[in-house]
Length: 228
Image (tube, rainbow, N blue to C red):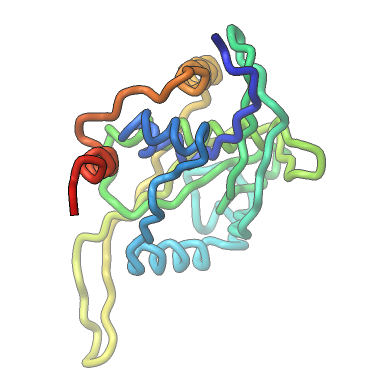
């Protein structure tokens, strides 16, 4: 029997949390029992902040020539959608999260950009596609008083892959690497099918089975049978 609810979903959870363990995803959304928060290593936070500082306020012709003419905005923005109706489901979902970077194109459309520090792994492209589609959907269908950017014409990743270390003097050094643009093509049908899959899981009366590789679920299960 479907749970007639409006689930609050974060696009950031559409990447690794959903892929790693549907049970953890269910527990976070339905029972409000999230995994313990694990801090991002400081070096990645620093690289991310420096990339945003570098690109913020620049014209794409100078900093992102692979994009149409426009202005890059790296000011942190909260986004929230109206309740999204998904065909075949009695429950709905609201997309709510934090957007780091978008581009105001000169033609009146917008681009959603996310910065990543890693190799351009093709297997991760699908994870991030769901995340960026979630932000685009929230921006094009905003709740009252929330940020509205429409239409969104471009989605993509700026991927920095560190590859070498350079010492320029006795006290300063640089980490060098390649920067790539990974474009994510809009596919609303596939994203809607993904939301349908998510709601099918959330509407269950009980959480699904744990992923066999989920270390958090293994720890929870082991702790229940461990006698101190």
